[in-house]
Image (cartoon, rainbow, N blue to C red; front, side, top):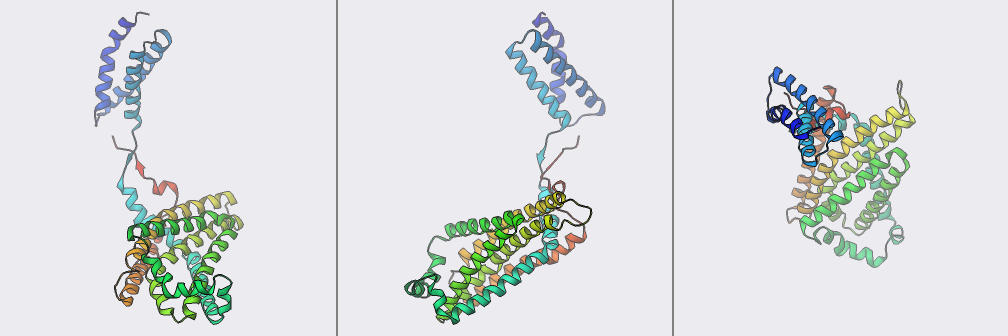
Length: 330
């Protein structure tokens, strides 16, 4: 085969194909022509590769064929619209649907933590099993308050965000096994109970509340949401419900859990900023607690109030509803 003659005879078709590929909008006739020229160019490429594979011509023609294919099938592009739907419908709707799981976890954990703080405060010997008397004295005198201002605010916020996000992710991911969630919650409850018990027992309960409440309301609620949703995932394979296999129920709940996990990343970021900038600030204690409570109530309003509206619109957490790409219209 004479390659030069073959290329010369078809150069006009290739040039036309390239012009059509670069156009943003095509008429119906031009779209049909694009498809036809693409098919011919693909055949030409196959012939040249098999009979006279000139590397330069093969490379140029391959680029042309790939570009034409992308123009025909449509390329995917990022769109902000699905991101908006995520925050306005999908996430609040899923938080509302899972509300009884995380509210139940929250109520039980708060009750246990309160009981543990009171028990440790009334029985000083219990705290001795976890820290020495000298450590307890330092905790009350300096360490508890100093913890919140030991590092630069931005570094502290990043560290707190990372730690809390990891804990919440562990609760979500281990929910399928159920028992690890109780272990993670128990470990954190023990830490809060012992620390709070030592502070309350030493007469520094007001200091404990002042430095825990501003960020703790939102931070602990986020952890409870992660734990509740994780347990919901685990319960799916125990009681999948009618007309669903365990695998289907587990997959559905897992998609829901991943959706909530994405939202909690931002919620925990807000909690970390409050802990770094509001908790150790020189503002009056009542104002710091009020700011933390305001942020917390905002989250509850979003999850339960606005979430109820999203739920009634019958939004779901399926992957098709939260896709971040869409096809352009031709």
